[in-house]
Image (cartoon, rainbow, N blue to C red):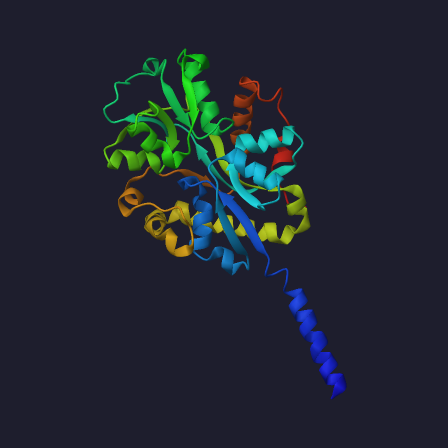
Length: 315
């Protein structure tokens, strides 16, 4: 009997110890916009749960803040921006894209300059001397706005660029704190449906497709548990397929994200009306290189770096 008791105790210790890894909570950060929809769907559809991944999500205002949290190890994975991925590696922070991507080009046009509905701004030249909101310096919309201004013969010094989170831009416009805002969905549609703002122009002025958001993690986190990364990648693949192939069902889920512990949600009217963002399973070399060109153009980095070092590839 004594031997049996010892065996049972050893079994329980082993069982509980072996399951500690399965109980680990993965801390994931995102910015409140439709560009984190692969995360939202992974949670709402139960894909993370089916892979045995328990997640704790945190909302951040911008991509640079997400990278700072990864550096400080307060989060494990962040749905961050491609400029931050590139700049971090140039500065010695070894982070990589581990799956998922949103992209933008002239066919999607979900990154727009918006203005108050009664604004007198009608052309790019009308922006001279005006205050323009971007989510933050160092972000994709900041650098693409600079390119838009340059393309239209406007110097950076001829406008005032102000950092404001996407979710606060409509209020900033109607309260006359800024004159225009470089934003994305669903805020473009929100302002239009409320008859508070109108779209003014698409501010990605070239014909290239650029990657915007991807899931980013430090290589130490990746190397510590490649199996977890593989599971995460499967979740993103399933979420991407759902978004791209079940658009009607995808839109139905957005107003009820709160039921799944996600702070970001939109009304049914907005969910039925917004312009669909481009989603794919992973970043592309061309999409990352297009952002790298913009960073070089703005003297943020001196030269191109090896894109292979930015994208995780299972061994």
